[in-house]
Amino acid sequence: MSYMNYIAQFGKGSMKIAERTFAYTATEGPTLGVAANANPTAYAATEGLLCIDNQATVNSGNGQIILPVCVHLWVTARGTAGTYAAVRWVLDNATQFSTGGTTLGAASIYYDTRSGYADLTAKGKVHFGDLTLVTGSSRKVVWETVIDSSATVFAIGDRHTFMFQDPVSFANVERSIATDPVRPGHYVHYVPGVQIGRQCSLIMQPLVTVMTAAPSFGVAVVTVELGHPREAA
Image (tube, rainbow, N blue to C red; front, side, top):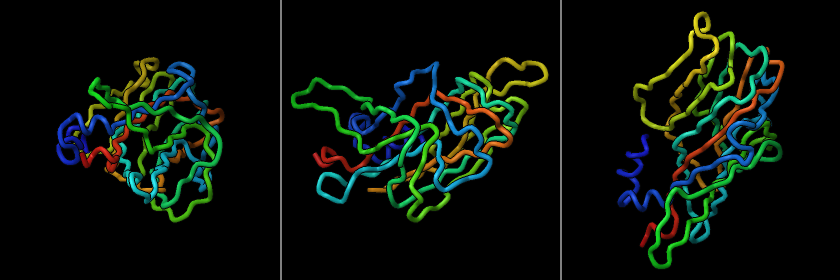
């Protein structure tokens, strides 16, 4: 669902939902990017591009549920020779990150000068890149889609935005390979509005045909966390 629908359905006013909204970014910066798997020609249980682990527990004050809002990627280095790219989104009932990639830093999107205010601490732990995952506890595929199919899969400057919301008409700006091979495209992809429960995870796994070198991406992620203690105030 859209961010405004999160506010309408889960927040008691925009301030309360903003306090529980977190933006995640990589320390590598917008031009260097983070390298992905060089040749993911098949989905593999221990490989991922993005992993969102919910580190909340069932203890008092730790019952947070994570709702992804969007994942935004932009290509900083092309994966040579790739011609077809797809991703699938997988939920697991255990945290899944093991090694690899980079850890994204979390920041609350809200500030206030009221007495006693302090940023909430995100329960989400987000990793991106050439990830090694644990084997998996009990996985289920919740969405799969083609994200690009052209002579220049992951051209530098291409942007891929994954929106977790109700189906709506998205505006994609795609380049013509024949007449405009340089200008990057902006692709917006629908993903169902999933929820990541306590000690569970959401994984994005890539599949790209005949790619011979690893692409790199800039990355930004936005989530909403329900269940922080101040919600009862």
